[in-house]
Amino acid sequence: MFAVIYRWRLRPGKEEQFVDGWHRVTRAIHAQCGSYGSRLHQADDGTWAAYARWPDAETRERCSTPDPEGLALMRDAVEEYFPETRLRIVDDLLAEPAPSIG
Image (tube, rainbow, N blue to C red; front, side, top):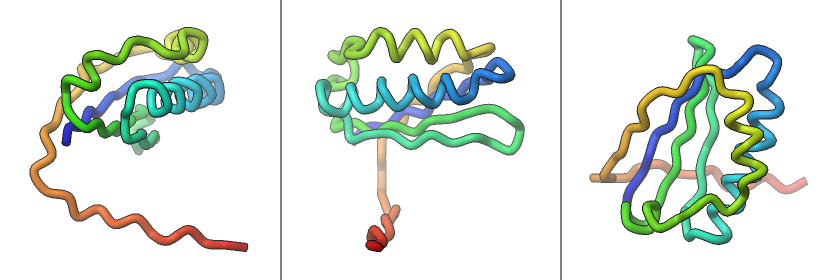
């Protein structure tokens, strides 16, 4: 498996727009490109980060932009891009909690 960490500093007041764009792009990539999805985080220092998992690096490289409008929303909200971090998963002990019903 393969993972990528993305990081951004957003323009003040554009956070909701960024999250909306991220949702659109992430769902489209999952549905059309075969990603395993992503998690979006806001760090203590005010930056934002997303962790995305893929079956392999080649699957990610083959993925074009399945939602250009969502990507435009994200780009408009970003003040600063940080270099992405590409990761080879060596071991995985992340355990998801069971969904609560009700």
